[in-house]
Image (spheres, rainbow, N blue to C red):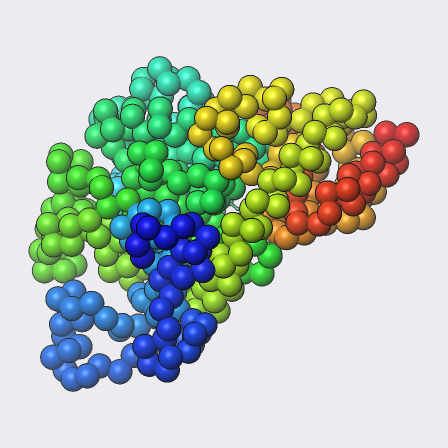
Length: 428
Ligand SMILES: *Cc1c(COP(=O)(O)O)cnc(C)c1O
């Protein structure tokens, strides 16, 4: 959609003209697995990638297509591919880049599930990750070797809400001739558009703020369309002849849509991590109100974080929107609309107090999720980080006294009152 239109307009209209078949104004849920071919020649052309169209919903579906178009527009990308979850999106993003023996350089500050995926599961594909503190740009440069295929980071990171200097990392990736992949889940394109800052690929867990109400899991990979996959021999899946399509070269054939076509024609076709049309429908509805919601999430988070920081029962608060945060200057420079609404705080009284606080809260739901309209809480040391030693918990920002909050859309004063009474019970 036209760049002339503002973000709020595009959040509602991008990718979703009236349904061409019926005129339906809301995007219909195309609950179908397959599509009738016009004739045998049409079928053959679709299967040969000589014509774009619908074959089977593991590959493409109009409801999911509308969501892909809207997200690609909001992120400023050339194309997007949706997946069944955020974790699936991460594998789909890496798949065309990687091969046995190849590695990625990944931030140390990542969602815990991503640390596990990158440190354990991808090893079974013969891939590996080197974890580096991305604030140390010399260490990032030093970690890149001839088998490094990408740098991976989160814009705003889970669980601490720390922010990444994306332009600085993108410049390093550029210099090395490799793509930067940014997980933009916590920021959403309302707070951060990584492609405008030099990233090549953006991934999301749509499960969180993009859908915004804790209803469905989903993910997406957005491609900037700007990376030259043929500039070196480093990315043969995109630049060299593809045996599964009679020697077709994706980059040469599809240009700035090469990564997107590969994600559908090879990734979804053979890995099958496809989103379903119902999930796409919920996410399309969620994105319509994204600008309104994220503005309120941020305002509430700023208020709650400030209140917590001033409370003597609280030792520290990690929110990058606070002046006390080491990331505050970066947040103000690169994330002018706010530093999201996920952060942690440490409670006086350690593990016992953390557990009691979670049990004492009434409005906050104790769940392993974030980015809901409801405020959420989790005590990581007794749940998500339970299998780690105390030293490992502390290194992951999930020490025994750490409580993670995802601030929702309620009245901030009600959230503060709930924290106040639960802190009294936990530390009294
Ligand atoms: C939740 C989350 C993921 C994983 O997404 P799922 O939809 O749960 O698979 C990845 N990155 C971040 C930052 C997340 O918060």
